[in-house]
Image 1: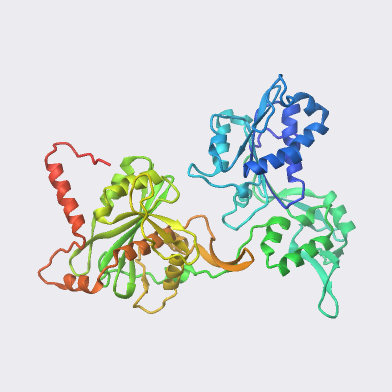
Image 2: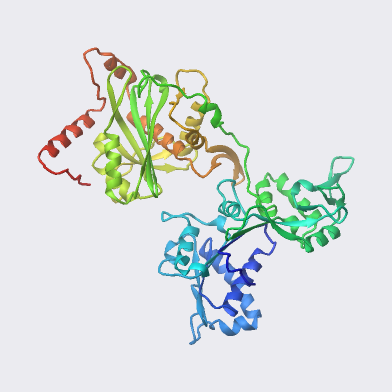
Length: 556
């Protein structure tokens, strides 16, 4: 199998048992035998790698004399041959798995092969495909990324994104009756039912989009064997292929229909869509329309409307930024979105956290004439830069700046008792993510201004609303029981995460809205700072700064 010089990436989004692993093996064998170069191969887990070696790669080498001769013998003196690496003249075949970034460190190779990429586990260092592809960066035009997988969930599937970024090739076949060209779709597969409404899979046939003729398996197989790949996007060095089970000459349509009916009866259509059709699955589920919320935006008279009595902040930590979302709360937990700020930079550096700290100490103009400060902040420590989060909150807990971590336990409370069982010894609060999202989405459905109603300012753009509604609740069968779970419908959902953290913050704050309302209305108060610890911190900083001629440096 030769690869054109101008191809640097190959993506196979293929159904199961359509030969994608065989194509991958043949390509690797070519580079070992005819064009020796080093190769890195990745599987989802170490167990998957061992299975692939014993069931796929090793049998190919044993049955292919050229490969058997060139690859070093196990426990031999002429080179390495184990479950981490195999040596041959001109290079090495090195192995890695997605859950262990250390298996990729200190290695480089021009050819990268990634199998079943939708099963890869993202780590704190990033997506495994990005990490392993970087290992070929210095090889220029020699580098090649070869990735295969059946897809999973729509908008989350890595292989779907990769396919869409390529030139999107599909196997087009020609109708034996009208010569209309088409690629095979499940919607064109038809079968009969008997007089009792029972399905008859043996009558399955493919219906031509052009003339409506019905192909039997023999005609379909002939059309497949004489078909061709046709791309729907211009070629830019990335070729991507989609192939469903209907395009295989190893599967009868009746067998595919039987598989569909079985999966449907079991309530597991996702498996059929992913594995047989090589398409992503999209649950209908319970979803909130972002447009309905977007058109509800309001003009606030001031930064914080009169009903907003206490401010909280939720902070989401990403690899290249911090996102902070400020929210105002009033009587009955009526709430107002105030500001969503993105701080770009490296969360591993103090400079970025200094900017966040300055933001948390700012005040916001209230409609009463007072200025409000943020009374409680929750920062996610569960995924990225945990140590940096602990370091930041350690000396700010008196200002109610807390570290939180999500819990996926069903029906867990919004906030659990804090634990200090971490190396920084800080109060770490566990959030019942599922419970919190139910409350957030439940309040988004409230249509009348009052308790629980959500207000949005005019400066929030449509992207923010799409992020806020980026998840929906669907029913999954877990251990045989129907369970409601939340799934993402698009890659970015930071606005929703920050809203959940704000809910946690107001639960921790537990404000006395009645008392705050009276103090805000006091005529002698021109400025109101709700949290006295914040006021003390500002005074302390002014005093410290006055003793220094140069800008002070905070100690973390």
